[in-house]
Amino acid sequence: MENTSIERIQELVEKQKVFFRSGKTKDIAFRKEMLRKYRDGLHKWEKPICDALWQDLHKCYQEAYMTEIGLVYGEIRDALKHVGRWSRRHCKGTPLTVMPSSSYIVREPLGCSLIVSPWNYPVQLLLNPLVGAISAGCTAVLKPSPYVPAVSAALQAFVEDTFPEEFIAVVQGNREVNKALFETRWDLVFYTGSPATAKILSAAQAPYLTPMVLELGGKSPCIVDKDANIEIAARRIAWGKCLNSGQTCIAPDYLFLHKDIKEKFIEAFKREIAALYPDGTRESNCFVHIVRDAAFQRLTGYFKDGKIVAGGNSDAAIRWIEPTLLDGVSPDSPVMTEEIFGPIFPIMTFSERKEVVDFVLSREKPLAFYYFGKKADGWEMIARTSSGGACINDTIMHIANSKIPFGGVGHSGMGAYHSERSFLAFSHERSVISTPTWIDLKFRYMPYKLFKIVKKLL
Image (cartoon, rainbow, N blue to C red):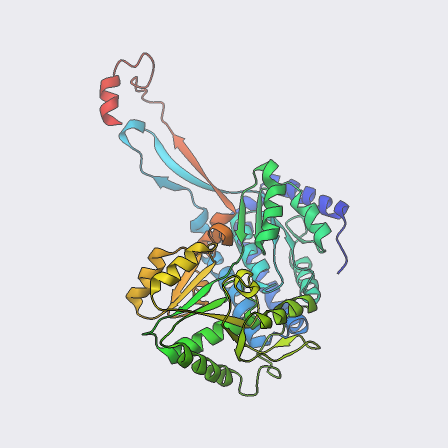
């Protein structure tokens, strides 16, 4: 993928600043028109984008639609339906001390935004935030990942065919391009990726005090308690781990199994993998492969951190790794201290839930938290820990409901999006007081003769 030149980046940024200042993006009719073009353009380019996902990631159409394209359609549909209400001026209550004024919240677009996406869900994580940018009335420069060149090329062709570049544009390239983008002044940066790169971005944007939405990751624990439904737990956990071959920011990262059900769960997990992939994962069209050689080498390197009790096979030529369970891992081993981002599952055991709580609290806050067992115990575990999101007796599915926010906390990110939260992420809520002139109450003016009365009102 050829790097976009710094001169071209600067040209696009300047064009978008001029376009935004024209005020055209603030028109609700314009936003709806662009959302409709977005929907129709995505339909036109759906097959080339899905073909590119297969080429880069071995991702089948069904999984591509469910985890990438379909979610974007849903966000566009929701924004088209509600953008008028989201953008409307909201009248709020006014206390006696501010009477006879009226109070309002005006939601206005932040301006020119940058959206940077990773390679693991290269369509959804670039195009979903874009729905928020368009519905809020912002312009956007999009930066897809160079690790999925076919997808990035298809996305660029789709955007250039659908939008004028002074409104939405795509730039391509490696870390040099990232550096240039990170050092450019933006009104908002929406970044999905690693905490390490997020720190570089934050430092570069610090002089401008740029607001940011950071969707990062971390090691999301998956706890299976002694009274869990083992068959259901194994099936849902196997599905959640195998989705995108574990290359998911909210994938269950490591297992915490109650000692009484450990062996039973391992056997159930093996059965569920076999049921999900009757012909095995190597030949399956529904099992995504690892994105690049360096990631493959890193992941297979984890095999030495424990005893393989399920899976363990791999093929470097096609970057395939079989879903693998690792037992006997040390809490300080690389597989337990680094985000895995692959189909490898280290196993920890516990006797009391307090052990799990203490362990989770000793680490960085994860993006997701999964508990299998009694619902009441799940709520107790959630209350005693912190994470971006959580599921009780399920995995992954909290991202599928656009009516609840998706985002991280602490080391796993900041800010949230989906549906109206996406609109708000790209908006500033401006407080406005409107005061009539037909009356001018004297109590607020010096020398504060009515202070005793005012004090009782405050």
